[in-house]
Structure formats: C-alpha cells, structure tokens
Length: 193
Image (cartoon, rainbow, N blue to C red):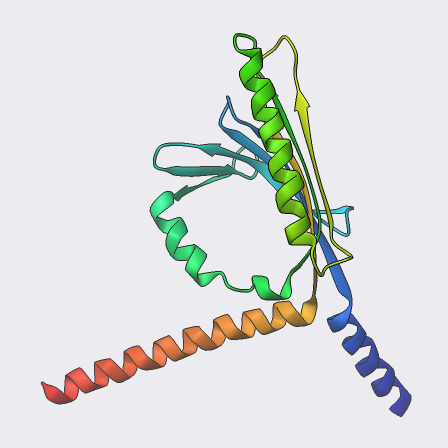
C-alpha cells in the first residue's frame, strides 16, 4: 500500500512536468477577410477549430455552424493585458507560407514576394539565436496569372501542466485580491458615512 502512494506521487509529478505539444494551423484568405484555424494537442487531438471574420467593430469567431462569438476591438486591448501566461509556453515550430499574385500588376507581386523573402531571411535567424531546437521556416509562393493574397501558418508550442496550474493560480489569486480590496474600500466608505 505504501508503494501505491509513492508510485501515485511519482506519476502525478511526471504528468505535471510532461511536455504538452499544442499546434495551431491557420489559413488566412485576405480578400475574403477570413482566418480559418484549428488547434490540436499532440498534433492529433482536436481542441478547437473554426474561422474568424473581420468586421469594422471587431472579430466574429465562428466555432461551429450555430455558435459564433463577437469580440469588439476595444475589448481585445484589455484582454491582452490580462493574458500574461505566455512565459511558460515555448515556441517549438513556426512554418509560414505566403501566396501572392496580381494579374494586373505582376511586377508588384514579384517585388512584394522578393521583399518578404528578404525580410524572412533577415529576421528568422535573429529569433533562432540561442534556441537550437527552434524550427523556423518561411516560404513565399508567387502565383502567375491570377490574383492571390493568402497566408498559411503552422505553429507548435510546448508547455507543461505545471505552467498552466501556476497561471490559473495566479489568475485566481489576483481575483481574490481584487475582491478583498473592493470589500475593504466599501467598508472604509461605510465607516466614513
């Protein structure tokens, strides 16, 4: 019986520290203002998927045929400040490909493709510096005889459950502290009145 507790504690510690690979596949069709996405755990287990439509006031995130969520641009700034758990997530892979073409101005599409390729060859080695495990790839496709403006991305991050638990604990503690401070201010106002 004693061994069962030891084995259980060891298995729990291993699961907390076991790396989880989370991959995001995204496809952006710029003329249609749509971003299609899919998130998988370990590359096989689908977590979420859908598409995002850009509107003037915000983003409409369609998670299924019947379910959509509208996120105003103003709210996104506040939410971004709250979301600070990215320190425990390590970027493992980033592969992008850009497809551009312009039937009326093929030279403009060519020079844009060349510029994007030069930028990627300059910037990607800077991100890779000191991280030999990091896989960064970028490709630019030039479509001849047709209009195109599409971006495809494959992103893989690595994290462990301990990082997620710490992040949730931080969020919960911040909420408790905020509630405590609100009650304290409320009691101070009552005592002054």
